[in-house]
Structure formats: structure tokens, C-alpha cells
Image 1 (cartoon, rainbow, N blue to C red):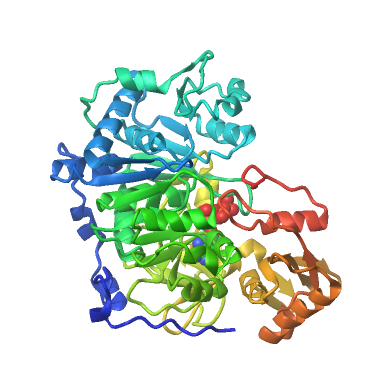
Image 2: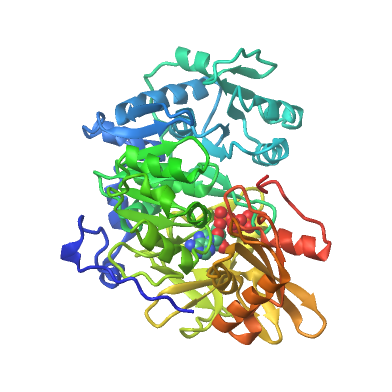
Length: 581
Ligand code: ATP
Ligand code: MG
């Protein structure tokens, strides 16, 4: 079912003039060279993300501006100016150099969402290292897989997380130093190879020369979310800052005076591309909240810090929906001007709900760890079609293609593909060059997602290529069925898979978690199945429904359909290192 298009006011009625006003015109005149010129570059030549995001602001007289407003779980607030950020990252750069870190060495960071995490990533970049942030909820195996695969030389962690590292320490031969922060101020007894972060920081000089990195030097590596299989280490270069800067401006509509909150953890690419690089390259003040999701607390963070631009994810919006409209009514959200979402398909139902409950429009955008920056987006000044990911950014060519690499006509489904060459495209999968090469075919980068494009150039997500269901001669994308399911008032979340069937090849099976207070029953199953049948085609409704208390998700909040399928078929579960507990 199509939802009504959300019409945007005319340009003169926007409270703040949108950065991208005319999508079609700006795509025609756009050039990456112009964005490259906006980057300052290192004084002696070269490009470094740390310099672009921090030092340049100090050099250009903005050192006194707030870079970070950090709120701890307990509610204490710490603020850092760009000048303070420069000093912290200079000292960490020196500290790492003192440990023998040289250009290209991997420095992994396994910390809660605390300021040290941010400064260590930038200290690493400024010292020429390659940063690898790890999500703080990872268990020992997940840490081992990533630190071993990347052959990281240094790991920065905390006294609260060190036990998980110690469990697997002897399986990490390349790891030379473990630096341990101690915000918790608990007694710390270093073991071999471990030392106090604060002591080393205290000794490090603040006089620092940034490593003269070139645009093509590696800067950061992120392991993917593990939704479709074993996480892969996508490696990015310093030049990626061009894509992140450009899209932070046109897709997130960031202006220098904005106060911006990206809810993603830096363990995932959204938390660095848009929780560090894009916004700070534009000199925007960022808010970081250390704690986990909690509806009322999140609303209060928005109010307390005067957030104007908010970037979050479908899973969080669905949780806000679960918490209800009342949770929002206790906070004043009037300063929030622009909201965006990424990570999974954003069900139209969620957009419609947020409009009603919060009075805000969530702008969906699409990208991947591999793409380094947003590729397809709903823009501030553009009408939003709920359920669509929006239109390609100026600077990217996106298409829906068939197996031979030919573009298919509007309305037809195919592989979502991008023309290689945008500046933040990943450079390799770490130690998996063949897999990397296999993603490029017929002059396209094949994203692994299925989509279709409408007559006006809006892209619509169908599902992961692996998740598309073949039933009775039809191809059915899980997203469409799931979106219809969540429109039923009893359904909180839904995931569908193709279940082998002798007659139909596959049937659609839905896993459904109900809203609080709804009682599972066979009658409800039949009602839900019928509800979907009436909305979609007769072949696209779930012939089987199973109620689950919750759906398995990655730690970044994505539904793991492959796990539901493996469990359904009694097959091995594969890599579960990113499974949320
Ligand atoms: P893995 O590659 O390990 O299986 P992953 O693909 O989930 O995990 P990410 O790079 O974090 O890892 O996620 C990118 C994917 O998330 C996209 O390829 C797409 O499937 C999905 N995605 C992201 N944003 C959107 C969106 N706005 N609409 C639909 N899907 C999205
Ligand atoms: Mg992927």
C-alpha cells in the first residue's frame, strides 16, 4: 500500500534555508573537485581526516567553539571545544608514536561511548594509524576475530571491559600494547603488555606534528554488521572525508550553528562517518549520549542539549513507537528541525507515526559500511515518499540493473548498483581482496541489495539479494510484507523468510512480535495473515506466522533473517558474533 507523499513547504517557508534546494540542478553542476577544494589539506601537503575535523577549526579561529557535548549514563555533562579536542588528540598522537606506531598500523579501540573513544580515533588518524572502533557490547570472541584479523598493534580499552580482552589476549600475537582507561576509578593491576592510558596521556607532550598522510592512505576500518554472514573488514582512506563532508551537508542538512546528535555507536560505520567525520569536518557541535536506548531519556537528551538535527535508525524509531506518544510529550522537542534514519528499511508506518506523535518527518537514507557515506537520500527540501530511500546524492550514479549489468526500466526490480569512483568508496575488504573484486561487475559496484526505481527517480528497497523470496513463480521482497505486517495494530515487529515448500518452491513465513497487551492466538494469526493479504497481492501474504517474544537482531539493531531461516531449517547458525543478547 502506498502512503501519501509528505509535501515540503516552498523554499522561502523553511525555518533555515536547506543546503540542497534543487536536487536535479545540483546533480548536474556538482563536482567532487569543488568539495576537495573545501578541504584545507595539511599545511605541508597531504590530507588527514584528523586535521580536517579538528585542527583546521583551531587554525581558522574556531578553537573556542564546542565540538562535543557528552552526557554520561549517570547524567553528568562534559563539554570540549575544538581547541581542547586538538590538545587531547595531539597528546594521544604523541603517546601512540611513543609506542612505535607508524603509518598504516592498526589501532583498535574497545571503549564505551566516552570522550576518550573519540579522541583516540582522531589521535590515531593524526599519527597516521588506521583506527578500528569496536562496539563495547562485544564479547571476547567478537573482539578476538576482529583484532586478530586486522593484526592490530595497539588496543585501547577500559578497566570495565578489560576482562573480556584478557580472556583472549594470548590469541592475539600481533597485539603489542593494551592501554587501559579508568573512568570508573577502580583499582587497576596491569598484566603483561597492559598499561594505564591516563598515565601515558599525562606524560605525553601536546606539541605534535600530524603525520603527512596522503589522500589514499588508509584511515579507518569497520567490520560490517554481520546481517548476512561473517563480518568483513571494510577499509577506507583519508579521501573518504570528501564524501562524508558533502553528504553531512546535503543529506543531513547540517549548518555550522546546528547541534547534532547521531545515536549510532562508533563501532558501526554510521557512528564514525556521521558521529565523527562529516559533522566535525563542517565544524558542527555534536552531542554524544553514553547510555543505551531509553525512550524518555532520549527525548530528554534532545531537549537538554537543544538538538536541532537528529540521525537515528529504524530499530530505535520502532522502540519509540512501542514506548508511545506520552513518552515524547514530557520533553520539548521544538528545536529539532531535521530527522534522518539509516541502517534498515524504514517502514512507512514509522514515518507516519513520527509525524503524528512527534510532529517530525524522518528522512530515510541508504548506504553501507562499504560505501563510506550516504548514497541515496530523502533531502530536507524534497517531498518524502514514505517507504522510499530517496534519490541518489549529487556525485553518485546509482542504478537498478539486471544480471548483465543493464539498467532495467522504471518500476522493475533488480540489483541496486553504484558506479565506482565516489571518494568514500571502500578500498578493500581487509585480507579479502578476492571478495572485494567480486563485488565489481560490468563496470558497477553491486551492493547486494535489491531495489526498484520509480518514474521520478526515487529508489525503493526490496530486500537483501539473499533474503528475496521466490514463491509460486513470484519474487517477493521481505520489506514490503514486513511493512504491511507492522501496520496491523497488534504487531510491534516482523521479519519474513522464504520457507522451502514442495508446491510453491517457497512459502512466506512471518515471525512476529506483538505489542504489549496483545495475546497470541490462532485467531490472531489468521487475522494478521488476512490483513496482509488484503493490502498486498494474494501471493505475498504469510502462509505461516509464528509469534516470538522478540526478533534476533545484530548489535547495531538489524533484524537477522538469516538466523531465523537457519533455525527454521535446522541449519548451522553461522557467525553470531554480532547477535544482540
Ligand atoms: P553484512 O554486510 O555483514 O551482512 P550489513 O550489510 O547489515 O551486514 P552494514 O554495512 O551495516 O552491514 O549495512 C548496510 C546494509 O543495511 C545495506 O546494504 C542495506 O541492506 C541495509 N540498509 C541500510 N540503510 C538502509 C535503508 N535506508 N533502507 C533499506 N536498507 C538499508
Ligand atoms: Mg552488507
